[in-house]
Image 1: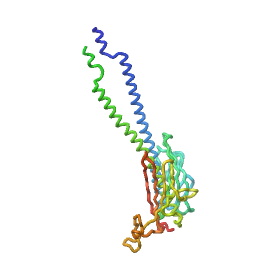
Image 2: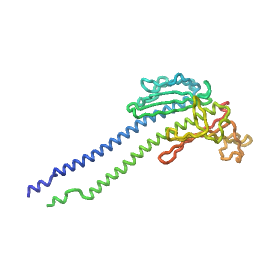
Image 3: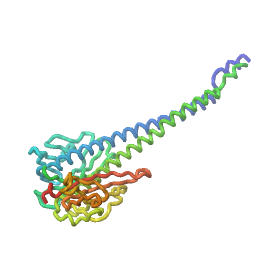
Image 4: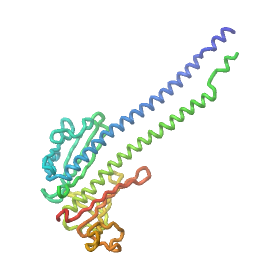
Length: 161
Length: 170
């Protein structure tokens, strides 16, 4: 009787097994939930990088093309703009770094790869009349090629620039 | 044999544990879907902004390179098309990027007459002649509207651009 009492102070093998199974189920659930959370957080950050690049390019090209004095399309992926203060801005895609450069200086971040940069001139009158350009830009995240964006940006030159 | 009285959990402990767990679940799960929804919404909005800008820029380009504005009827909706160069054709764009609807409306501009106290100022009223205003044949208001369905509610972005022939020297 005394021996029996002592035995009942611990757990039986069955209790331990059930306990371990339950704990492993809980762990599995928590780890999966954490992984999903971290993954979606990382994905949101990657998408944010592309959105940021998109906004930057939209602002940059909208301003420079709208208020340009003169616009020259050097090649389908190279654009030279004479600004209202007579300075020039030469935009092109640096294929080795996959970044858009302005006068040789990158204007897109190294977390974003620009895969394609194409300039279409849909102006109604021949140059030097007002220009209307459509820029086609394809980008993807530098480390996660599944995160990608394609967009078209249309900007028309304004009068009196 | 008092050993058996403390075996297992008290019902109170179990209830507290379940309560804490459910509070955590209730707070974490909706915020997760809220973030996903917000991210999708801001992405849709960025896309809509680009379509809005496209409509506005094309309308400006067409009106700044054409002297015969009568080609584009007042109070009519147009959509931009390109066949090597931009053109506006009557109609409304639907299913742009499978989601967006876009139209460019051409509106006449009503101004105070030369004899009034504020000659030439824009008169923003529904009925121009009733307010003793005059339609300015050398001005147009170009209104671009982009709308899309965001989980059952319709979102709309609008941009208004005023073009005048005097400024354009057409």
